[in-house]
Structure formats: structure tokens, C-alpha cells
Image 1 (cartoon, rainbow, N blue to C red):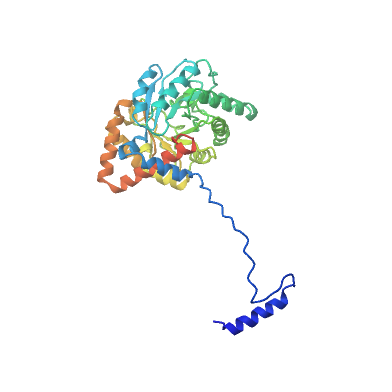
Image 2 (image 1 turned 45 degrees about the horizontal axis):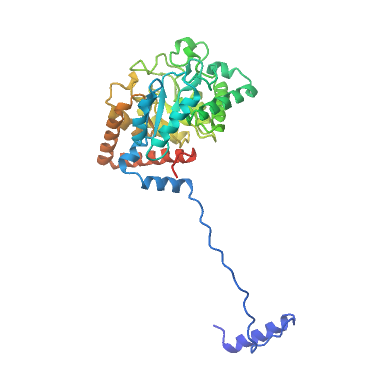
Length: 391
């Protein structure tokens, strides 16, 4: 430690080195310090993760689990949606066909959002085009089939997709269960009952599907509508429809298949689309379980290998023949246990049974409870990104 004497000599030397603007003397009082002003730190708005935690803190366990369910509301009986809207579930799916004007749907959608006790609802519809266009009333243009959309040059497809998104947004809807990303091999369209027979595919090559479906995803996102890429890992090679057939099998698709890569490319788009799971079985990937109930397909392949960390939504787990042999509660438990996020059921009456089953399994199985916790956070983070968390 320096002594006082050495410190004094150092001070004297320092005086010689400083220009003589002012006298330097150990006896001279130090000049007054300039007055310092302090600015109170500004509070940063909470980030997405913090907003999710805030919302979680305000929900009891049943309300958290309810956010993982999207229930059907018949388009010919929209008043029946008031009760599920008030139940605290994650969203509603407008099922069927309607020629109601967009203004009428917008008023209904806003009523449901007002009734929702927590975060705002996902309000979903099947609006693909061609044979699958649920909304055709005033305010909704008739859309060509996906195959015809894909034949358009990008300069024409982009505004069509943007118009599709704007029409849905103006009607109060924020989730489109489209586009189809299934690749139907050329020459097999008529034999592919769920997709090719109805021209729901965007082409017969991975490249054509990726390009056209990507335009649709971007057009929807530009209007504030979240897209859904379906049906992973692909229904382009099956013969039967999972809505009407119990055991639908794709015997050839592998984890390395080009059509699987289509989903990876589209799902990891900056537009953050959802991915809808197929209810078929893919023996070359997991012979033991349907894709929607397979941890190998959902967690290992889609989330792990392909790197998708967003919302995974089921195809219908209510009325579809492919799942009907399982009790409703087991359907929900298996889907969430496989790594899914949102359970879609056209039949709203079974949602309480499904929630009860998820709560019971969570209480008995800590690992499953942790998986459910992660699904709830994923679901709420997607709502935060879409502006649906109440604030």
C-alpha cells in the first residue's frame, strides 16, 4: 500500500504535468462537483415468455389444460358456440358449409371473443378452395382448388392468397386449416380418396407443393391469419380417408421421404404455421401407432429431426372413424403424450371427458404432466405471437 509521503510526491508531479489552467495545491479546496442527474430506468414491456407466464399464473390447472382444445361449432348453428366459448377452451372450429355473409360471422366471432374468460380464442375454419371451402357467402370469393391455385403464376397466386386471408380476417377468423402439403404421385390422383380425388393437392412433386403452399401460408400470414400445414407426414399415398375408414395405412413413406421434407420446409417458415397430424399409420416410420398418437412421428421426427417447435394440432379426434375405437379421453392423452399441442374435435360434447382424462393422467404421471405443461406454454406462446393473449 503506498505511504502518504509517496502519495504526496505523486500528486506534486501530477501538478507539473497538468496545464496551468487552474492552480494545483493540496491546500486548495476541490472544485464543486458538477451536479449529477439520474434518470429513472424505464420499465421494458414484458417479452413473449413473460406474458405467457403472467397468463399462466392467472389460470388454474383445469383452465390451463382447456387451452389445449379446439371444439367444433356447426356453421348452421352458430349460437351453439356461445357455451364452448365461455368454457375457457383454446378455440372453436367452424364446421360444415355456410353462405352467411362475412359481416354476420364477424359479429358472431366478436361475441365469442367477448365471452371467452381468458385468452382470446383461436377461431378456425377449413378454407382451402375448390371442394373444401367452408365459407362462400358475401365477402368470400369462390376459390379455385389447390391444384388450380398451383397452376397460377406467383404474381397471380400471391394476391389470391392475400385476398383469402383478408376475407377470413374481416370475418373475425384467425386460423385457417390450410394449406394441404400432401404430395400425390402423378397418375394416382383418382385412387387417393382424401386428397387427389378432390384436387386438394398443390401438385405431384415436392417442389410444386412447396412453392405454391408457401405462397398461401405467406398470404394468410400477411392478413393476420395463421395457416396450418396438413397432414403430416403426408396423406398423398393412402387410398382411404381417415374420416370414414378405421385403418388407413401408408406402407411406403419413410422418415427420409421427399414429401416429409416438404412439411419441414413449410412448417419452419417465418410465418409460423401450425402443423396438423395425420391419423393414418406409417409402418416405415412407426408401425406401432397412428401418426397422431406416435411419439416417434411427432416428437422424434417432426420436433426432433425436422426442428419444428411450434403448434402441432390433431386432425379431428371426435368423429373420425380412424380414432373411434379409442375412448375420447384416451385419444387426447395419447395425442398430447406423443408431443401434440392442440386437440381438435368436431364433437364438442366430449371435451370435458377429454380434459378429465388429461388431468387424471397428469396427476398420476409426472412425466406426462411435464409434457402437458410444455404443450400449454407452446399453445399460449402461439397466441401471444398472434395477439390473442388478453392484456
